[in-house]
Length: 168
Image 1: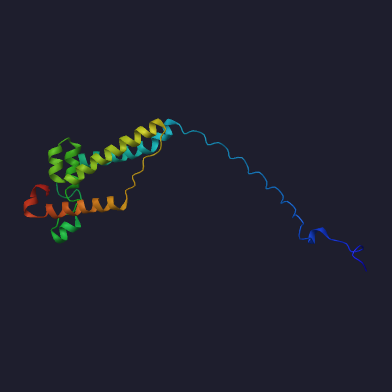
Image 2 (image 1 turned 180 degrees about the vertical axis):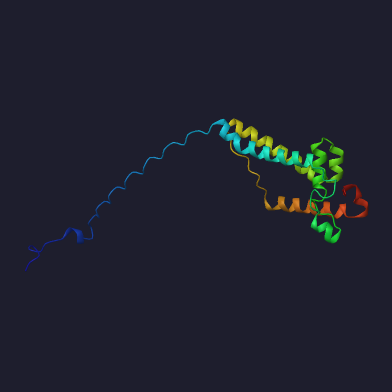
């Protein structure tokens, strides 16, 4: 037999072009997200602020200087060491009554925390009112270490004889 009668199969040919794949179906359209209303945007920071306000109102009403209203710090009860939170309720009580000097005397670190919280809440409320992004309070590892060292120094100093001004 000669080469004239042989049939050349195109798909088995080394020069054959593979068939094109079928086109993928178009993705379903995503419905547009309606813009959030101002009231809805202000709900989270408003409720957070209301909860903090209620907590301050309660501590402002129920005096922590009178025994029996609040539990004693377990670290202080067991060891006599003042922790970073010792005096925090007395500080909040004085702060709620507008007595900043007494609040600082009870727990200066807590007063700093009140102002940091207030600044964060103002930022959150302003951004929510304008429709901006929610502020993120993400600290990097060195910042967390700095906060921890600050709290540790605060604890050590307030428990030493020369740091009695920081003790409640």
